[in-house]
Image: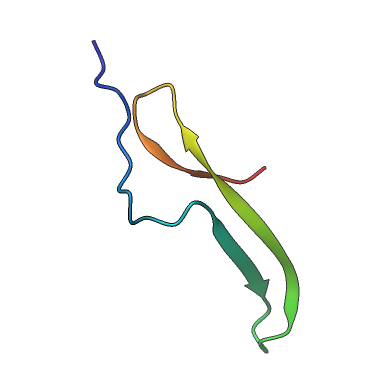
Length: 47
């Protein structure tokens, strides 16, 4: 049986991700929210 997912309480609640081109111009910014994956691991997920 898989152990329940654990998160570091000091870890950020989300990640803000900015995608830039090779010249440094921003293309977009998105938010990666926390997710508990069915495999038992935890992380962030962007759709």
